[in-house]
Length: 137
Image (cartoon, rainbow, N blue to C red; front, side, top):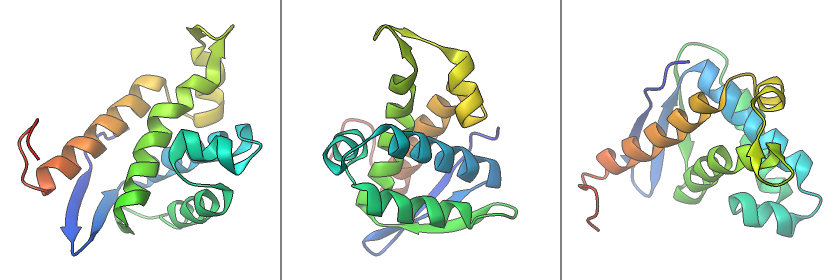
């Protein structure tokens, strides 16, 4: 999976350019978290949104079908997407401690390292788009 992500500020929002494979993975991760979270409170802890907001974000990601396409995200949506990428592996812990790669890969369609790289590149691209050096505000 291509790890490069482009994030461009546009007013208070961000324009995020994702490859279709990245959008598919992001949607799969959000779906896994939505399914594992029985209540809005549980999902809110994991991604900062309840079921309705996550469902809307999944629909928007699923609409990205072609070559790299742009997705307009509010800052809180970008945060939810990043949080989901980081939280999804916790659903696949065996006995609450050891990560199990095979069920993760079966659910999401890629290996954890790809999801971690997507989360990292998303955060780095957002930071670069804001023109901030690491550790500055």
